Image 1: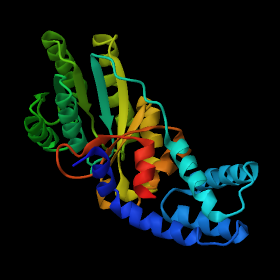
Image 2: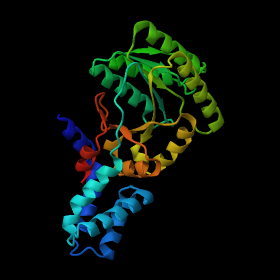
Image 3: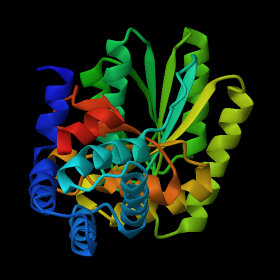
Image 4: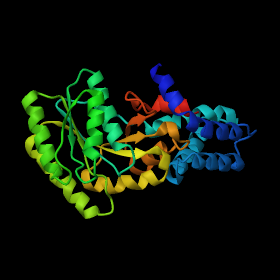
Length: 297
């Protein structure tokens, strides 16, 4: 299956949700208040959020006025481009060695995303090691080990309840000894005790800074697209702890709420870096704003 076909098929539920509503909106005969009200309702219903929707409609009105557009159908392409621009962030190319620390609450598909990310890098010819630093959740390291085996990459793990920073230390030591290109670090997903989470992530960061000071560092948060707007609030907590560089949005194939990509970008001005569009190991794809918008409109 081609790259775009995979995105299109994975976003079918979101497309069915958004496209039908927009089709009805753009059947209007003129660009009046009723048109903009219906467009606003359609975008919010697509889980784009109030902030993003306000920004999109304000920009659309300005462009329509500037280009002297009078027919709703002529405004459709304007909307498409505005949506693309709103989520089109430039993500710097990776340098190696590369360390990606992956955070997120339990149940969002974090372990699966790390396994798929390992497979993605390996398919690009990179050597990979995974650090099972979520030592809090029972059997988290065993689940990650299953994915590491499927991807054919090495894993460093300790017993449940061990010091997560010690796991990261050992993974970095192994990576340096073997000249490994990519280190993927899993972390605990508990939010009920924010102070412990902060302390744990801060300690891990100190180990990384000390042991791998010249590596390319990225901190990604995994969000579950099926939770819609609830995913947005999770960004703030983890961003305080680790200064998030980007988002991995999972389970897009199982939801009609793919518009949450716009909500997240508008709220935090943060790029979506990868999207999960299926259950197979190669169903984690680099995010492309143009392909994404074209697949849902």
